Length: 116
Image (cartoon, rainbow, N blue to C red; front, side, top):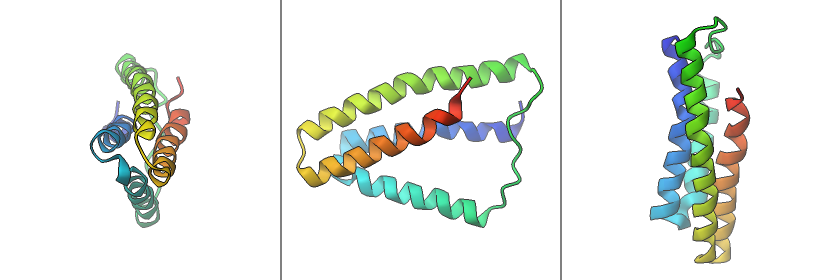
């Protein structure tokens, strides 16, 4: 495993950040997700895309690292959907739209990056 493979920890950090926002301040979840979205897009523009793909060498430690990232992400994604639905039950329509965007963006944009 290379040090650059640690960037895949964002796959756990972003859903945790969204889950925290859903629990503590669901009314700003959509805005917070937009801020993260624009921050990622801005970093993509400012930083060159010369980071290599995950190592292709069959390292048992690297394989275990990615396997555990996936195993941590799936229950986190399910919790994110459940908490988002719970928060939507107690919210007005504008907040529900923000919750739907927030949960949909995080669960939809990250799941395909973590295939085994």
